[in-house]
Each structure stands twice: as C-alpha cells, then as structure tokens.
Image 1 (cartoon, rainbow, N blue to C red):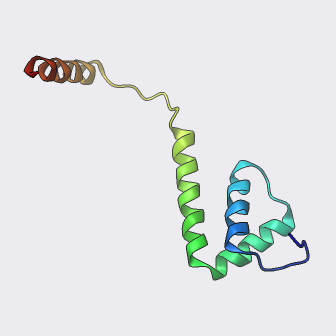
Image 2 (cartoon, rainbow, N blue to C red):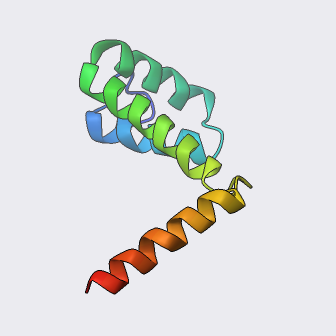
Length: 85
C-alpha cells in the first residue's frame, strides 16, 4: 500500500478496523480509516458490527452461572425429553 495515499479501499478499511481492535493503529492509518468511514456506509456498518462482536466475545467468559433452580428445571426438561424417545 502506498503510505502517501489518503483514501483507502474498502478492503484496506476492513483490515484497519480489525487491526484496530487487536492493537493500536498508527496515526496515519487511524486518519485513513476515519476518512473512509465518513464516506462509506458499508464499512461503517462492518466497523460497528465488528466492534459489537468483539465485545460479545470478550464478555463470553463472564462468571454468570445458572441458579440451582434453573439447573434443576433444565435437568427435568432433559429427562422428560429422553423419556419421550
């Protein structure tokens, strides 16, 4: 990629968006991504969806657990389904 090029392609914007979530982008790449996202609604949508999915994946390892009542209810549903077969 030519580093003096101000406007980037959608492919480059997608890569910059992903790279930004993984690590810090250099200033020049942040500016190029910002300018592209102003112009391209599809890349803005991708950027929002990618941020959302990244956040969901990070939160996937939360420590929320089912209550004992929920566990018993699920166990009962599984046993009922197994007995019907």
